[in-house]
Length: 320
Length: 205
Ligand code: FES
Image (tube, rainbow over all chains, first blue to last red):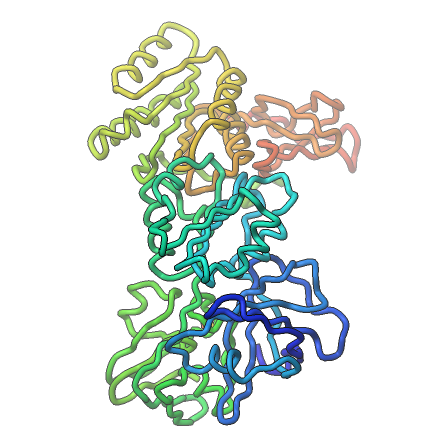
């Protein structure tokens, strides 16, 4: 992915849907239609701030058959490095942004006999688009949506109106919890489960499904890691003979890009594997924050996913 | 020869128990009993509680040995052993069971290749994936052959060339296998020179 492939858009509408979540509508600058996508796709939004450029992944929540505009939901992260704060605070109706073409790393299984969707908080967004694909079809489905309190249940009206009983909501504040065991131990053969939300929820679903005998091929999850803030460090790019300095609230990938060097990426959230970079020298340690490398690969310290991971120590040399 | 080196020919590995599953469903035919009994024995040592969730559907070979095989299954302590007179009857019962089955079910299939293919075809309709099915070829390699010209299926083919039951064309049996059809593809053998057939040999014993 490089900047030449981005699409220029303009913010057409902004709605505050919960105390923490804003809903943005992005229309193409030149009118016309945006590229087609399938439910579960995300885009990268490029935000050019005064001193820095942010590129964050957001799931598309608009109907896949509606291409005049894309919609995304953005939660204001407490510990944001800037992307979500920029969208929440600096972006107005009319602001111009760039986006990358949609990519689907979280597609529905095409021959499933049933779909069970499990969302936690802002994790509802990819399911909103997927429900559009499922609605009216022959394959049964249900959505389990867990939120902190009713005030935090984004898009609930839209879901209830359309899906009725197929949507079940659980509020932490009312002591309600998804009955993971009962839910996952009673599904008919050929069911697929999809989960998107906080790490604990994803872990819980995967573990419960496995304990109920589910094979891995029927369990799907998506979690974009938010790159954590860390200590500043330096990286030497061996092929291009450049030293880059990574600020505490900057990612390694952003620092490399700021130096004018392109690294391929799709998700910028540690899941797709595209930004995989070889580590050719290390005096110190790597702080892996991705969901892509295996534990063995992580401890081997021979590769890093620069979109979310960092280093600490004296030196880091990359094969770039 | 035209029929080698095609990747779609299924490759089967020896059966073993997948104790990550919660329910175990076994389909066997003829000498396919042996690999299934091996799986049951493995369960008994590694996860005895799995036996109570294990069901066996079996077509015994004809003759005196039949009862002995069935008794052997019954003695293992699995939840249920059902026997059938032929593959069709077994597969009908299998389909009915799958409509009731829950996620967490593992399928084990052992027997002649064409029997396994038909079992897998049904499993596919229920969206069972590779990590839910284990199969071991055991017994005849006779093939079901799908005529690419008239779409009829000729059963129990043991020769490299066979006359189609549907259109009577002479078909060359290829290694190209369709999981959806549970059959190997048969292509007209004398298309270029009508009447000129390669020597017919028994190759799938
Ligand atoms: S861009 Fe997807 S893992 Fe880094």
